[in-house]
Amino acid sequence: MKLNREVVMVPMSRIHHVSYTSRTTMTDSTPAFDTFIRGLIKEPLTTELLDTAIMALEGWQRDSTEGIDCLAATFSFEDFNACMTFAERIAVLADEYDHHPELVIRYGKVTVRWWTHTAGGIAANDVFMATQTSQLTT
Image (cartoon, rainbow, N blue to C red; front, side):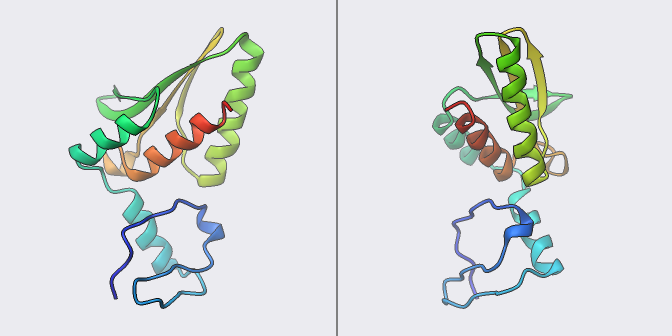
C-alpha cells in the first residue's frame, strides 16, 4: 500500500480515517499509526522544500534560534492589548496541535518562531503552524 503524498495537519485526537491510494481506509487511529504520522510530519524539510515553503509564506523567513533553523515572522498591531490577544490566539492554536512556538511580545509587535526540536530545525508541521498563525490575523 502506498500512502498519498498529500499530508493534511489535524490534531491527533481528531484522526478518524486516512485515505490511501488503494482507496482503503483506516477507521480508527492506533498508537502505531499516530507514531507514524507524527514522525512523518516532524522530519526536517529538505532545503528545496523549505525554500518553496518560505516563498509561499508571506511575511515569514528562515531564522535561527539557539543555533537551530526556524520559521520567523513579526506581526504589527496598534497596541499592547492587541498583541496579547494575538498571543492568546496562538496559545489556543498551539495547544490544539500540541506544538508550541517561541513568542516575543513588545509594544505593537509579536515575533513568532516555529521549529521542531526532534527534527533539529524546520519540519512540515512548522510550515503548517506558520500558515495557521498568519490566518489568525485576518
